[in-house]
Length: 428
Image (cartoon, rainbow, N blue to C red; front, side):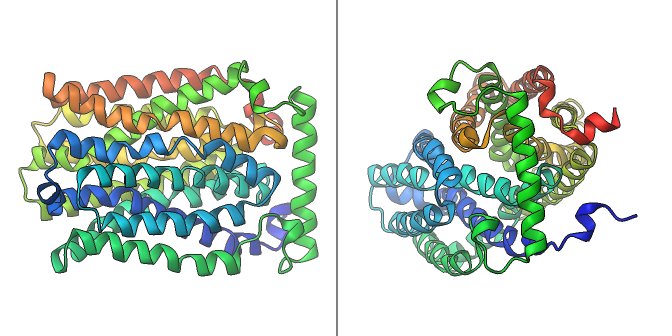
């Protein structure tokens, strides 16, 4: 017999997810292209030291804090579609202006502003996913959206490198900023905030989604006493802080790996940057496979904790082995690919957890707080690795990431049983 989800029209998968994914890809490109600009001559032209260049890349995450909670709340209570339609032009203009910067100070201000502009995007996008996909589909829906990071990592290097080689780092910022503006078109034409507002969806599909979400919300209200709680009221909530700490340690490992992967490959293989660029793409191809595998397993079994812990430990183990057996270049590289396979898999399942712990009235804002504070790991991870590499060696830097990932797995094991879905309960 076919399951209920197999007999229901699935236009939401084709109509909602593509524009969400595209917007996220473009935002990630505008976020990380500064690293290519630095290596493409921006540091010399603006008189930036290596330390200042690193700070310019990291200051983004401080601006990233500001719209996390407001963005999630707006998406939950009002319109995430309108929110992103307003911030896309803002971050596009900031990107274009980055190509016109004539001093380090100007660049720092613009990078901070870019962080502010993009800060609300992820909680808004994930909240919109929660509005369209019931719990048994949410892990896979989140996985598709969160594939923006590996996809953007695969394409940003060749595109940015080509533009810089043909024109320069200034043209790269300007062209990629203009592309952000073009993305507004599919966003405005295709996206709807909720099935209740969509005119293109069939009655059968709409009733299915609304019914499933109402059942889910009723179950959450019976399990939790936070229906009328505000974000302020949730601050003493232990689960909130566990998720923040978990995300911080995880993001430290994630961004630490992402930031230092080219350097690790260059040191491992002693190759030129062209070969390093090619070698760095395979871990991100493996990343997509890992995201799809673990999100599907988690959705089918309803087990969220287990399928966060397994990728975290797999990521940590592969990182550890990649530096402990570096005497064999290709075995070490295989384990870096393995690290890529696990690096984002924990995240796609992780973001299916907040809706299981908080009512819809506060889930958007809670998701923003978790993402905002957790993403400070995006500054901490690369910084601590760089500090330890300078003070000791590459191995010690990687060991720090392994330790943070192990802590993240331990925290996950302490999350409430309510993060598991009804599917898990029935299977138990």
